[in-house]
Image (tube, rainbow, N blue to C red; front, side, top):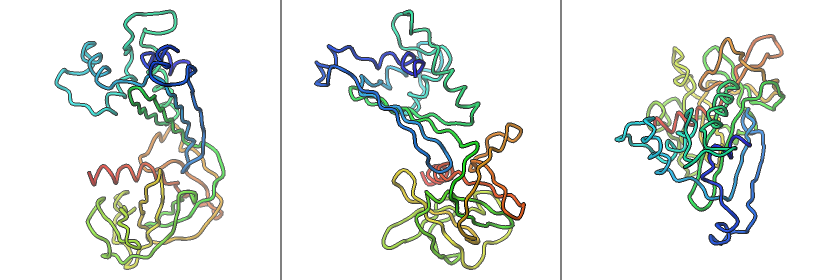
Length: 273
C-alpha cells in the first residue's frame, strides 16, 4: 500500500485542497477483498485527487518511454505508471518521486500470476483492483465436458444451463450470441476457444455465467454435475495459461482444468469489438 500511494503521489490532496473541492477534510481509503471465480480480488479505492491520463502520457513522452505520436486510451495511460522509473512528481522527496514502487508491484503481480488494473477520475479518486489466483482452496464447481476433456466452472459464477442446437445461435467464432428470454447473451464455444478437433454434439449445453454484472455463456458438450473442488496451482513449470486458473484431481484420479471465466469473457469481448 505504501508503494502504491507513493508512486502516484500526484493523486494526493492536502486538507485545504479537499475542502476547496467540497470534500471532507480527511480522505478515505477503502480496502476490500472477495473470492470471485477462482480468484482473490483485492480492491483499493480512495477519494483523492485522481490521476490525469494526459499528464501521465505527457510525462511518458518526456522520458522517452513512448513515442510522441502514440495513441493511448485512458486505461493504457494509467498502465504507464508501472514502467520502471516512471514518476510525475516535480521533485524528489524522502518518500516519493524516484519512480520506484509501481514497477515493483507489477513484478510481484506477474510472479504470482496476478493481474492489476487502475481506474481513475480527476477530482474524484482512484480504484486499483488486484486479482490473484487461488493456489489452494475448496470451491463448489460445475463439472463440464468438451471433447475428451473435463473442466470445472466455479459455481458462484453460474446462473443457469440451457440447451442449444449446434446451429441455433447467431454469429460465428467468438462473436456468437443467443436469445435468452428476450435478452441477447454472447457466448463462446469451448471447443473453439481451446482449438479442439471434431464437431460438437447436435445439442450443446450453454452454461450461462454472470461476472461483474454481465452475462456470458460457455457452450460445452455435456454438463456432468456439481462437485466440491480443491483448486491447485498449475505450477511454475507450466506458468500462466490463458483461460485456465488452476486444476483439480477428480475422484476417479483423472484431472480437470478449472476455467478462468473472466479471461474467457475478456477474449470474447475483444473478438466482438
